[in-house]
Length: 198
Ligand code: SAH
Ligand code: MG
Image (cartoon, rainbow, N blue to C red; front, top):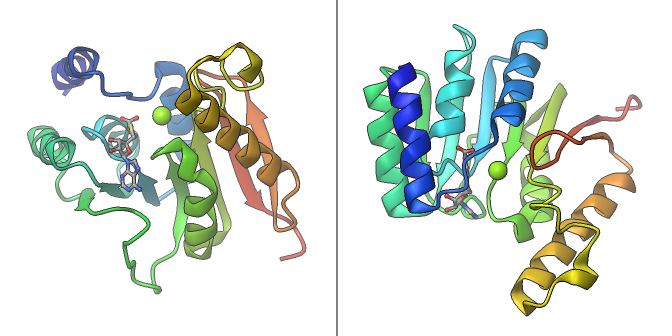
């Protein structure tokens, strides 16, 4: 298992797969244990790295993870199997904005880690699948330090992506249904929970 994790880390580096930073996944694993999380929905499996670490940090923690890129999906499947976690992790090959989840299942934790420009769409679509005392965690809110420093960006595409992340942060800050705490951990992450009134 440990070897497999190291292997995944070097695969990610070689193939430029943006897997989560160590401090961020440690934060999420602690969150899972502290809040007795049993059911996680992840948007953006990539090669299964974060899903495998989440599933392995607690015996009764099950993950559904969505990935739209076929090569990464296949790699995730392979890695999940190699770690013996295929009973705990369900990898779905589809665009998360097209997935139709069963409305009967609600999640303790939703981890948003897909295309950064789509964060608001993911949030708005999947909040209905969050338990009353659940949380939505979003990764990469600093986006390598570019967020809040868009005046220094030359590339138009990058600038537009970063402004989408900035808009998402505003969306969270002004949200009437959710309270959000922002953490300066790894590439920046947030934890959003339903406001008390609900
Ligand atoms: N959570 C992973 C990293 C995910 S990287 C880890 O930390 O190990 C982001 C992934 O999201 C990419 O592989 C990308 O293909 C996928 N993705 C982006 N937008 C998506 C969408 N709309 N639906 C499904 N997958 C998406
Ligand atoms: Mg990430």
